[in-house]
Image (cartoon, helix red, strand yellow):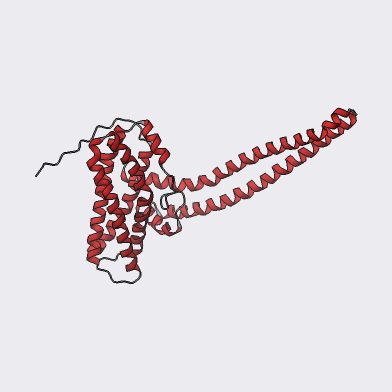
Length: 314
């Protein structure tokens, strides 16, 4: 039997990690936090404990949706580029690509198995425990190969131009669990996850108030912005009327025929100048309002991400 060739991992220089790669690494930390929950439920199944099938279903639903639809396709983009510049990575890349397909198939299968159990169907606990154990171990091994081998090779092999082109080809999709706004179906899972990460109960209550406060602040901001826009329109309309009245009065008083002929054009110019200035003020006001609305929601997700980085290492 031929001896398998060891894949050498290059030394990584002390440099800033490209945003594309940093995003993939962050998502691995998020996935690991969910795999930890799945592992706990697997151990309860194995030891005939009280399993929380609801939370297990939520975990598997997320792992059967977001990674397969958005995370793995972005990794595949990087794999394709890495294969072009680092031929020695081809064998492991083939294995990782096959792993993406296998994890997609298995996460979907496990999700529907747990969903049927939640709907009252009898399932074999031992079989589910074995399948979950194999799934978690395989997922963790897959991410370990990516984090500690392929990502490091990519960091050394790909140029700034390569990373820039990968960024251009990366579709931004809001994460339904770790994004700025947790989708309703993942709200319970988000609370469980935050509690597991060491967030005190009072902090969870504060987070709920923060979300409510953010909503109230958003409504107030929208209301104030609408009022301010109406003020701008009113002021600009009044200014146009005053300027046009003064222009018409001075023109008629001058008695110059040429100036009287030009009067409609000058009045139109006054109106257009004020409309343009009012539009600019309104645009700046709307941009500031959008930032004011976005900030409170971003605070919550940034805090959660910081906790995850501390929990699993930066």
